[in-house]
Image (tube, rainbow, N blue to C red; front, side, top):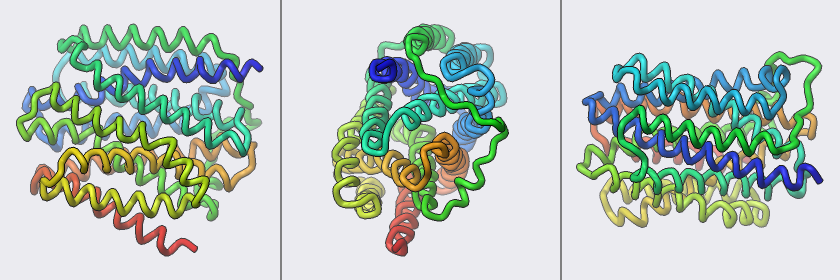
Length: 370
């Protein structure tokens, strides 16, 4: 009974964190563009955030074992707020990379806490629905963050203070929940058996590919539209359309995955993603292409998560969750820096060419899967 009403409270807390993160992820590249940072530097700042995600994923289990789930989440929100305010101290590449690194750690730890609470308390029959509701809430918060971005102050310091208020609300709600995660006898980080487990391998690869695509979108899409001459509000509107498409597609995509099989749905999504990238490369039907891109990219991760979790026992779910976040973060870490370098060297359209190549690889992998 405690968990039944803790779930919506947990999602409310997540909503505040996601609004803050969404607004910040779009605003940071725009600030850097105004300060004449190169696309390569913008991509590296984005990669520093995902490096923090990687370290946070590795350390999350230790934090949870030491401080419990709610206090670990609380401390992460405090670090998020302090690091965002820290961005106002100086506008140089190294300091912004460091602060974004700490923000990445905080975000990864909050995700491990939330997803582990959902996966542990859910059953085989309810886990998929709970994940769909969780990710719908996450993407809804992302849309709200983009929609509210025009009302946020443009000064870095005042922007950070607004983020601090949102983090305070997130802490207030998480302390009202009653989640307790099981403690392991060994607090060491040992997820290699999960990564090497063959039945869940395609699911983990899907998580990595989702990280590559979503990480590059957040790090480079605002800069892409800014270089095309769009205003900040117009950039935010394109991001809203992209993410809102993913929100709307969550429930239908997960229903289709349960009905027709996860492999088939991921295969169809990858093909549609290649079509969307082709439309964007040739600048045809831009609105339709963005809707198609958002509906496919943002639904790969939950379906891949469900695939990987369906292959392990309940007591291994927390370790599998960390393995999924680790592979997702590795994809988010590597792709923005590499794609940003290619865009800086060749042209901005290589953002979508890179997406099409990644999608083609996933299509081949799924076709070879028996």
